[in-house]
Image 1: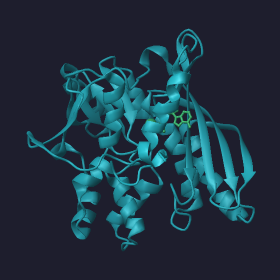
Image 2: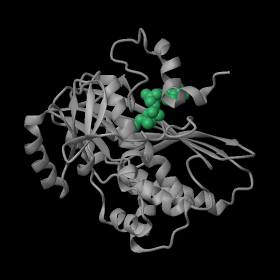
Image 3: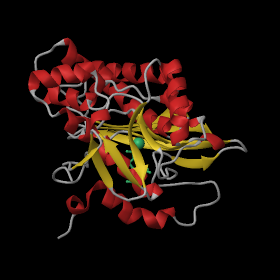
Image 4: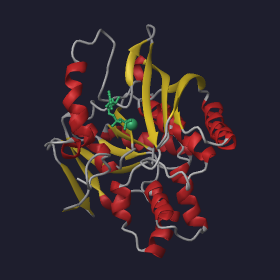
Length: 337
Ligand code: ADP
Ligand code: MG
C-alpha cells in the first residue's frame, strides 16, 4: 500500500491541489505560495496563511515554555506574511487543548502571543477551542495586507538572479540539537535555543525587499534552505547553485558547533525553522540593495548562490561543484530525502 510516507508532504500537497488551483476568480491565488492572495481594493490585496504546531511533533511540552509557544505559534505565521512582502492585520487562533491544562500555562501562552501580536500590530479577532485527550494542537491563521505591486511570489525568479538570505542559517537547528541532547547551558547554547523557541519573523526585512521590483522571488526558510530553494525552483521553472562556504553562520553556532562537533554545513542547509527570508535579486541590483539593507538593518544581505537554467540544485564549495546529502525537513518522509 502506498502511503503518505512514500510521497512526502510536498507530494501530498501536489496530489490534491491541482483541482483546487484551476478556475479561480480574477485576483485570487491559492495553494502553492507562502500565503494565498485575495483581492481587497484597487491597490492592495489580502494575504492569508495558516500554520499548525502539534505537541511532540513541533514542540516538546517539557522543553518549551508556554510563553515561548504562544510567541512562536504566531511568529511562524507572521513569517509567511513577511515572505510575500506583506504586513499582518489580524489572527485567528484554534486550540486543541487537554482539560487538565493549568490556567497558569494558558495565561503564559497568551502572554507570549499578545507580546508578539502587539509588537507586530496583529489583532487577535477570533478562533476556536476544542478538548483533546492526547497531543495538544495550536493552529493560527493570519490575514495580512500588501500593495499589489509589491507582492513577492515564489514563481518569478530567473536565471542569473542572486540568491540572498536575510539572516543566519542553522541557529534554530542548533537550538533543537541543544534541547534534544540536553547540552550544558552556555551563552552560546542559550542563544541557539532562544532562536529555536522565539524566532523573529522578518516582517520589516520583507517589506523592505518587496519595495524593489528587482527582487524577483521570496519565501521564508521554514524547512531548511536546501528544501525551501526547491519551492522557488519548481514554481519558477529554474535551477539553483548554493555556495556552501557563503552560508552565513552565527558566532554562537560556530562556537557550540566546535564544542560539540556538529556538522555546521549540514545544519545550515538542512535544519528548519530559522524563519529568515530567502530572496532572489537581479544581479546588477545586488550591490546597491545590499548597501541599502546594511544601512537600514545594520547587517548584510548574504549572497549565498545563483539561480540557473538547469532545473537542478547544485552545491559549490569555493567555486567547485560538490555532492551533498539531505534536503531539508519533510514531515511525512521517514528520513531526509
Ligand atoms: P509554508 O511552509 O510556507 O507554510 P507549506 O509548505 O506548509 O507552506 O504549504 C505549501 C502550500 O500548500 C501553501 O500554499 C499552503 O497553503 C498549502 N497547503 C498545505 N497544506 C494544505 C492543506 N492541508 N490544504 C490546503 N492547502 C494546503
Ligand atoms: Mg513559508
